Image (tube, rainbow, N blue to C red; front, side, top):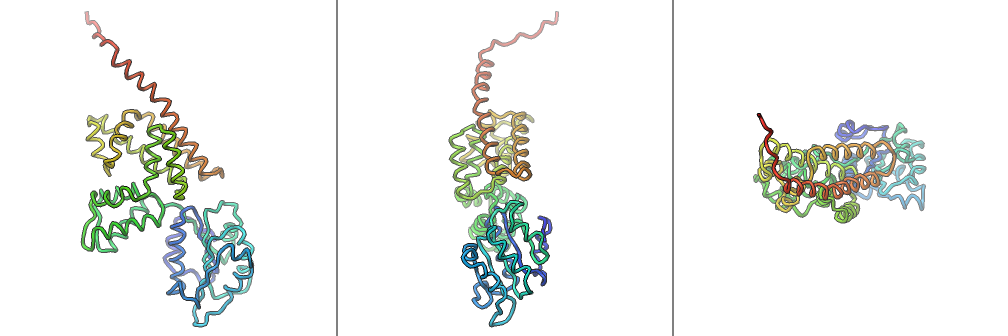
Length: 364
């Protein structure tokens, strides 16, 4: 059974259907895969450490002994109740063993399979999507709305509240990994304390340096046309397993903020007030860099960059080409174009400063 994104929440809200024997969780967001796996496990057993009802296997375990999965699924709990079989670090080499269990006799167990980012042609993914006794749940990086809901939920669950500006700052700086978001939101709630309120200053103090600022580094490096800094930031984001689409969206948010500031300036605001009116306001350590980029990115170039980023995200999702390669090529092209345009912009500005004033046309 293939579940679309809009069906996942309803599926996770209730206990899995009794005819379902296996659920595959896959995608680039490892934190979300683990969180949903624990949620499903809690629908089957009260304690996932219960040795009588829970068995944990890995992909390498099945490679060494393919019959292990069938044995654990068919085992009967000594204390009664449905069994949970957790299959972690699964890949396509687990597909044959899982298929044998799905095509075999009924078992009073649920197999929760945790995998990475499986392509559409993956044998394991195709099996879970097509088989009547299995379900496939995609776990893609949270969008801004999902991050906002999670942060607010975690803070409110701790008996605190969060100001809108602080929430906006958190969303802008937390990236899209579910586990990182939850940890940082719990830190905010602890900082505020029960009955307290997380202010913008609190969020900046807690999150400013600790969250996934490599995404900010990438965005500012692209905007500055700094190829060396961009290369370093992309390497760091790869080490943090940041999803390529999340990187594109982070850079897109940066350019949207530049566009908003440019619109405020066009309406009569100065640079300082335009930056202050952004929500969240520009982080104090980034203000000078943001101001320089405002002077180098006119609105026409910003809109072209946003269109290029949007095209790259579509390509990542539809072409089947490596999404990291698409992302990095796009960002280097934008940064290189910015670096090449800067001298021309500087020359034009100098020429304008040195040009003699034009005389008003004669009315005679």
